[in-house]
Amino acid sequence: MNLSRCFPSRQLLFVFAVFVFGNLFNPGANRANAQQATLVTKDGKTQSVKIIGVSGGNLQVQVGAGKIGIPLASIAQVNNLPAPPDLAAAQAAFEAKDFQKAFTADKAVLDKYKGLPIDWAQQAATLLGDIYVAKKNLDLAESAYREFERLYPNAGPAQLAVGLARIAVARNDFTTAKQRVDPILAEALKEKNPPRSLALIYSQAFFISGQVKENGGDFSGALEDYLRTVAVFWQDRVAVAAAQERADALRKAHAVTAP
Image (cartoon, rainbow, N blue to C red; front, side):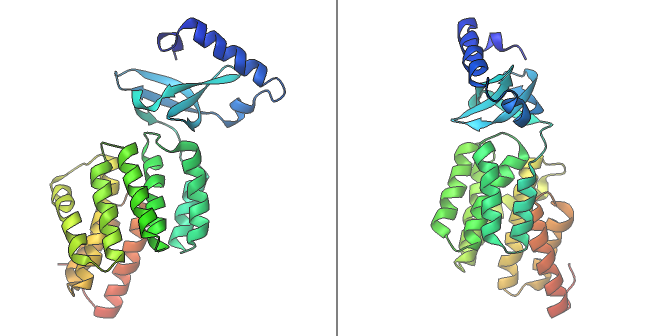
């Protein structure tokens, strides 16, 4: 990574000096926590970096024995960075309806990576809102979804609509929930190969649509939507687990099949 293009040489020298001395008593602390990834900046450049985390609107990357911040606003995406184990733990706890455990694990991910432009960080951000919905903290849920819109403006409006639809379902306002997700469903049905960020949103939207139809007594239509989440837009693990549970329950209770 050619940091000299992004930062003046004196500033870079100062950063090196500060962190070299700051790590004298804990050498390798940053190296132990850094993970190799590929960074794509908004000007189209690709660089290999060692990521430490996100802090103060900057991506912290390892430089020698220290670190330096790169503004998140200058980054288009991050690739080849595996999701931390805490995210899988949060998702598993959510599926098991252990919402406090899910919250703790998810917060650990967000505390380190909130705003990182990578799919799993977006999942962690939306999961926080879902956890608040499950815990009936609907005001906090709305705040979490609106925070997502701020952090990820490209996917934010659609994700916010899905989040607000989820809140509407929690309030038994199925009319509003339908109004929120219907435009997203229409777009989803046109897509043959959506980017993963949108596929995650479609996964959630079809699950919510299934809930709306199930509440209205359209069990066959609900099953179809649940199965779209399970088999077509399967990218959101939490939505898939919930959709599979409802699909199984519908088959058992009403002996329905998808149209």
